[in-house]
Amino acid sequence: MTQNKSTEKKSVLINIIGFILIFLIIIGTGAFLFYKSNHTQAAETTESEIPKTRVPVVVTNPVRRTFERILATQGNIEAKNIALVSPRIPGTIEEFFVDEGDKVIAGETKLFHTDAIKLEQTVTIRENDLAVSICTEKQAKASLEKVTADFEKAELDFKRFERLLKQDATTQDVFEQQESSYKQLAASVKVSQAQVELASERVRQAQAALAIAHKDLDDTTVIAPINGVITMRLAEPGETGSPGMPVLRIEDPNILEISAFLPAVYYPSVIKNQTEMKVTVSGIKIENQTVSYKSTAINPKLRTFEVKCLIKNPPDGIAPGAMAEVEIVLESREGLGVPVTSVQKRANQSVVFTTSGDAASMKTIKTGIESEGWIEITEGQITESNQIVSMGQDMLNEGTLVSIQKETD
Image (cartoon, rainbow, N blue to C red; front, side):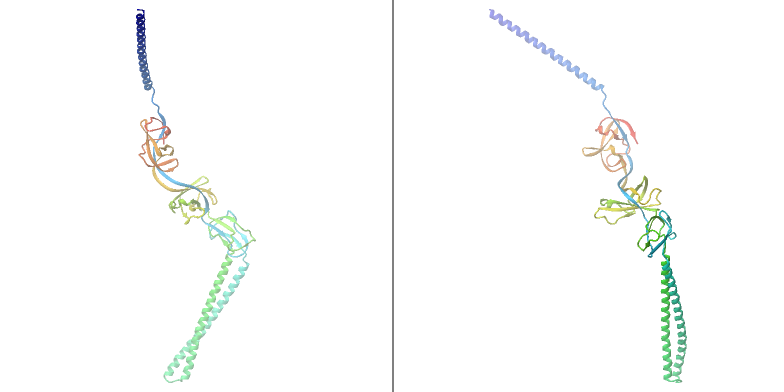
């Protein structure tokens, strides 16, 4: 009996414990579901209340402009027309009529004078030779006139005796004597004519020798061969000068030449009288020049070639000997361009971002020539009406919301 009561008590206790556990499970489940519902509602409320972030950007419109592929280098300025003046005949330089910095006029300005005493004597001798030759020529002509007169008389006698012989009015012997005299005088005429020709030739030789002597005498005073300025004097009065040894340097400052050397790889791209050269000297820009000279061969050691352009009537401040900044326009064409900074590399492709409304759109493009901070668009769906992001594009992706801060020209 006692054992049965103990068993009943244990059974009741187990039932009570089970009920309590079930009650606790129900309470916990309800609390969890209530917490989850409240948390989800709070999260949804917070998300709807926080505004979406916008990336501030600066935009600009594409521009149609000229794009140039330029090779920059340095060049030298030289005078196109240069004359190194030396004495035309050997002798002592007696006097200079000009000095460095003086302007000279071709064919007019006297430069210097060399010793002329010996040449003056030579002129006198040649004048005397000419006088003798003229006298000899006169003598030969007079002799020819005398012989010609004798010949004409002998010719008349010969014809008369010829008629007499036909009429048997003279002997054969007398006729032959007259014929012989006639032929001898004919030969004498030819000799006299030859002597006149010889004398005339000697006169011409004497005249030529005298002209040379006068030319040599005139050459003792050297005249400027070109217009320009004396840039260098290499001798002093009293020094001996000779042909081929320059004593003065003349340069024409009105026609200058810009010379530059370019790498051989650009040889096919440079075309004489077409390729443009932009020159800057000491801040002075000289544009609209074209290549006037292109060397016909490439230097095999330096692998370079020379180009030149002419500058007529250069502005003040540009002189021979100065250095020039040279830009060779290898290629030039019109095209649509955008700022270089607006182009990015994404997945090994060039892209730009445009704005439509408040969202960014990524456009794949291909680029060409870069010039003065702009780059040419050769392929891509870009027009002049597009707004291109030029600042802030690093933070953009397709569809990113943007806030336009500024539009640049």
